[in-house]
Length: 144
Image (cartoon, rainbow, N blue to C red; front, side, top):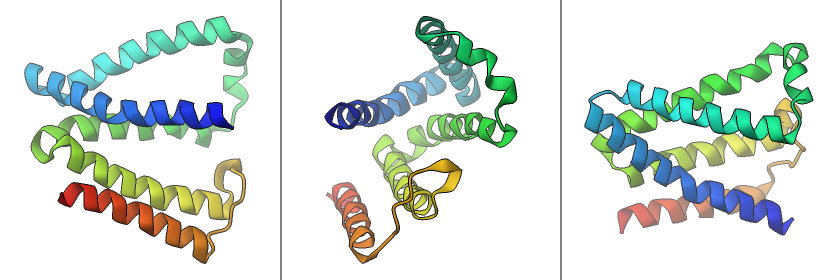
């Protein structure tokens, strides 16, 4: 369990860095969309290399996957495009604040209903209070 927490902590640390770097690139070149293309090209190369090292047979099973699962790519594109466009105007902290609030709401719904095959973890009063405290903490850091 600790390794999973550390991996996700590292991913969380990277999200604001990704936002700041790509927003700066988009501003510098005058196109958030072009900055996103560069990001996705580099991400594609890195991911393909990893997938090939981890076992290319999984790539052959993609055509048999339910098509709705492929919509995750649209969501990541929306995130990258929106953060690249919004961060220079709204601030990285403000942009990530609203991303975090959205993540808390979405994660609670996915866990509560077990959407997309997720482990069911009902939203009870204790979990709702914890999520509220997390949201309040994120808000307080933005008001400071």
